[in-house]
Image (cartoon, rainbow, N blue to C red; front, side, top):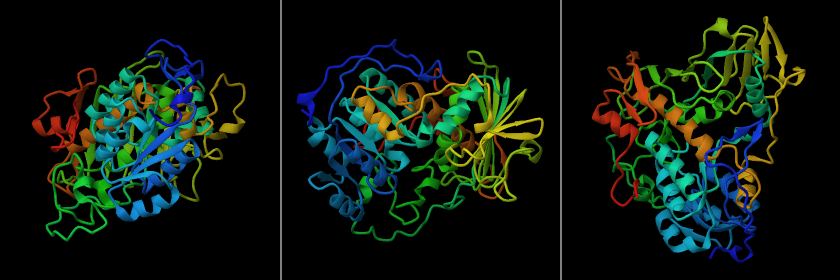
Length: 463
């Protein structure tokens, strides 16, 4: 039994299964489950973003186990979490420590998110998983279903979801501040890692401190190279999700929250061309979302690698010096535009509405019906919910799973817009998407593997 389990408070709260996260401007009550008064965490991946995620776990409970494939990373973590069991392999951690933990954080490269999270969730462990939630669309759907089936407390690590400026922007859209929305434009200056590369032919020795086979996890086998570990994996199809996966869970977040942008029906990409080894140097992606609930159809455009929306669309928007902010979102309605700059949507000074060419900062908007709930903090939301209080906004079941599917569908469009390779601009075909079946019309075998990967022996996708 996990530490603290003998002091479990069998508090139960009820709500109809499947109720959305946003009700009357707030967070819906969570489904019935047992609460925990002192949480025992296992932290899978403790370097990079895992460093702050594991620190948050320590601030909200007890870190009883840590896991990383890098001995140098583990050495630093062991000093922070004295007494925690230490592992290289998350499978061994969960096998040996399963009865001693209540929840896991998963802060590994994208390609191992689902393998680690699914194993933990199938054991009934609450899960905090870094963005993007998964490496593939099928994994995102499966994690959503398992979290719902097991009635778990979940949260994706897109921390801007907890920001009050972002939540208020979403609430303003829902309240009709800019009227009927027809278009959304999202951009980022990423990638800041190399893309458009060939697979390296050299095979340097694996550093002694790196457990390379464990780093590969469920991905296809390949020789070690520093071009992958510890950072540049983001630009490789087998391991990362490119600029879109890295940033859209942040920059698309406000629009997704305000417009309920689930289940597009088609997506199309234009790219710099790529070799299906690394992502292209830049891409532009067009999504079509059908009418949903009270809103009409919406077209969304994504830009990365230095591409930006047309200048005329940005008239009246604030600037960073003489330039547009390096990342942000522009939501266009028939009564105005909502502009939200920055990586996480939390720039209170430059977020606001453009109406008749005039920028109105968010704090100066009056007489709006917009309501939202302030967050105690993104990680704390999750920990509080495990203890029986509230529901995390970016939970897998009602929010993060759908957001991740939208993001990764864009990468599916990028995959089929490979063209003649890097440096050869390509207009890809329109991908018609059936969200209910997770099927792309006329999908080839390689496209089906992008939707649902095959795991390397020793790792389990479908139980």
